Amino acid sequence: MSDSVIEPISDTTFESAILKADKPAIVDFHASWCGPCRAVRPVYEELGAEFEDTLLITSIDVDENPQIPTNYGVKSIPTFMLFYEGEVVDRLGGAVPRTELRTLFERALAV
Image 1 (cartoon, rainbow, N blue to C red):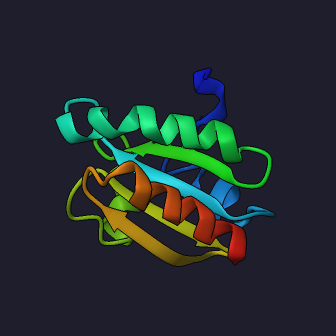
Image 2: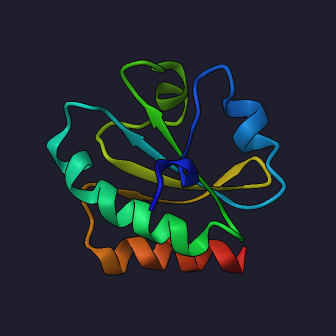
Image 3: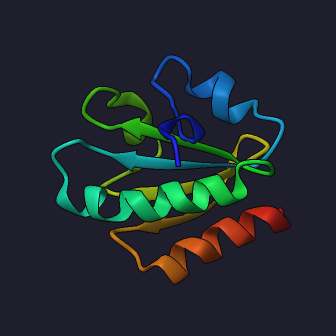
């Protein structure tokens, strides 16, 4: 899978990219130095490729973009949040197993 499936966003692009998105969006809050983030990233990318036609798959580096994670109460990374129509619908924290992450993606299809 190419990295192009995962659209990186920033504090400045968050509102237009996520809150005004025309389909559900899953955001991966991560940092480059975070071991658990790196461990779960391949699974996130695989699922992103599988669901890319129906969901917006994104990521935001919490070190480079501290405003949005703070606004949404991200206390640990990785954190995955499902947004729909400008609202947080669901969230997962930590290096969750593939089955839990897949469940988040599947729930996104039901919103």
